[in-house]
Length: 495
Ligand code: FAD
Image 1 (cartoon, rainbow, N blue to C red):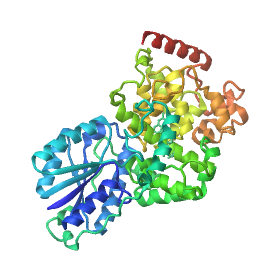
Image 2 (image 1 turned 90 degrees about the vertical axis):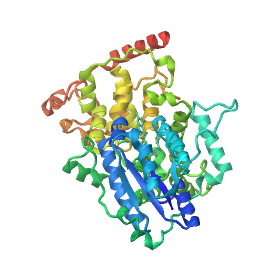
Image 3 (image 1 turned 180 degrees about the horizontal axis):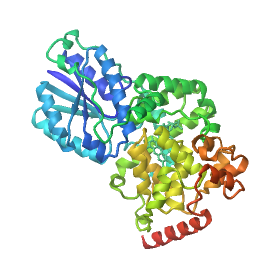
């Protein structure tokens, strides 16, 4: 017999709830622990997983495989072409390994829940227990309700309730039990071949070129040890000033931890516990402002997952607010291409879109600016932007991405009101006052200095911008704003 842990978006050995339970079960039963990862190319396609993200996961799997092997625990990677075949294949492996217990952390997206429901049934027929564990959120979905017993749809009262709940249930932040060794014999015995293979290449269509692979590996070192280093450095150097610096895209004022949450190389529990412990009060609220603010940002991640669990239709291309279903979006291909390629003529928007292409990541302030620009200035269907982000982000996470787009396009949960439309030029002046961020990503504007950097053609630097080959604005903000207001209003009236 054996016990199996199935890794999904939890690619770490530290502070991993299901893995800890699987380990304890195997130890108590005196049987080996085997770890499994299912690589489904069709899943990557269906979920628009960015090639940079697939690459990051494969690099993280290499670290995980090595760490587990040191504990004489194999990590087997099973490639399953069609995702519908995943449950049957997992069941077949359980049988081949004579395993009676399967453990995994829950993923809350609709496809994954359906897959798991199928697998629970299939395994039960074969007498195999399948235990699914809450791990990715700090507070499991469903625990927090309003006075009327409903799911919160507004962040601020939800967050107050989240803080209270964690204070009242301190075990929610407790470190999961570390994973111990298998019997050394496992390496030589019947599971020997599970140790002896190379990490596979990314499936075709999701594979990076050689230059990109090197570049992203240097930018985003993978695996849980790197995640831990990054968190410690952030807590040591930057968390105190997080409140003041988090909105400035030209300074490294944020943690850059999202990539690790998305692949599970860092647990959000570990992150919040570590930050909290640096607060003298040892509380989630109060104490150092930067720490408090950062924890409240990590909580947004929980918030959007709770929303997804409660209103699963957001997974099905529907806006959270049904009354916003009738807005007549534009599908102007030239506008969309200019946006994706960073050629809109709005320097802050173009810098941000090029940061996404260059790093697989974009600063949060800029995500809000470009999303608002797409949905409002261009009146393009926000789902085109949501999709493009997923296809390119290294930290792509369905709930946070969908939540962020819903916020910016005013169709989501607790959104920006539709009539509040970011002015990209004012945003640029406010958050990139010296144009440092723009200069870094838009080389055509080299030499454009002072306020002209935010709007070179409108502010007397047109000749220089033209010489550099910088495009002119594809829309005029004031007119675009009026058009958006009218379209939203009409949509809501018809909704
Ligand atoms: P920090 O500022 O250090 O924040 C710490 C952590 O808090 C982040 O790692 C993240 O887990 C969480 N967090 C912060 N802000 C948010 C937020 N608004 N919503 C949810 N969680 C948050 N985040 C993703 O992880 N994946 C996505 O696919 C994603 N898409 C987004 C799309 C749009 C349109 C917008 C506006 C935001 C999106 N975000 C997404 C949220 C946010 O931009 C990133 O989490 C953040 O920029 C990551 O950088 P960081 O780790 O340095 O953040």
